[in-house]
Length: 80
Ligand code: FES
Image 1 (cartoon, rainbow, N blue to C red):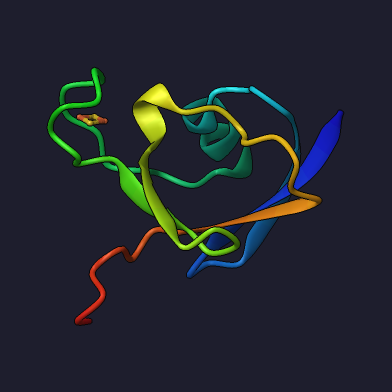
Image 2 (cartoon, rainbow, N blue to C red; image 1 turned 45 degrees about the horizontal axis):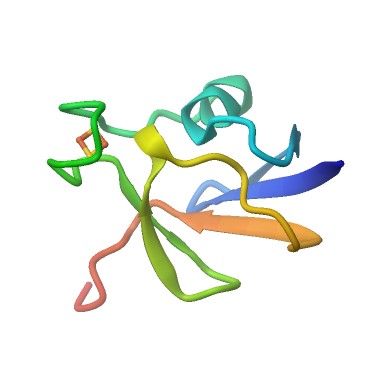
């Protein structure tokens, strides 16, 4: 199933498949997500999923299922 993935703050939208690694999707969109460990422990790659109000580590996450559209906000600091 294909889903629209939108990256903020640049507002770049690409088509992706459910379960596709988010770093791969970001690369295709031309969006750079900072990474460190690539193992889900340093949280350098964390983004906010706007639809679910959750923070996820993109290095270990795929495109989530059951959402018609996924918006990822690279600014995850809530006090910004
Ligand atoms: S790169 Fe360290 S948690 Fe993703």
